[in-house]
Length: 179
Image (tube, rainbow, N blue to C red):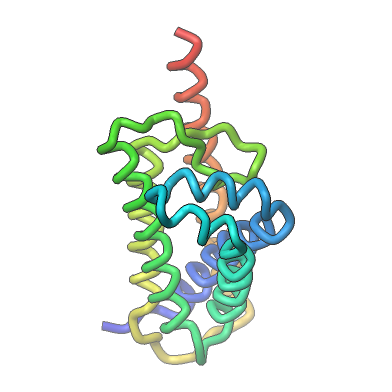
């Protein structure tokens, strides 16, 4: 089964946007992300994270975003993206199973107050599934200008869906807290 080229470009654009934003947030605000991420780790591993692993992760996310845009590296980058998104989902799910519903996600940057929730776990798993879809072999390269415009529009649509889901989750959490 081959992934139609227009869908591949759209998914690559969406995931590249997602990881550029995530990586840049980590590189611009390393102290906040170090502290936030350390809360997800077992106590013995927390010093490792606080000692500088946020920079390599931010660089990895930005590099992965660029690799997603290049057809030659897209498959490997898509598998890496899927693994990273699934890892984030599993870390959140583990915290939920431990009864920790007070942790911020950090998904929308350091100022976000969105807390880990089943909805965020599901969103990350669905996004990881899209990354796995992108890892499928590409179809024939016959994209026209109209096809490229369609792909860019689809990428924008995926970004809008992602941001809309983030806002719905945030609004739901705010409403639940105000009750």
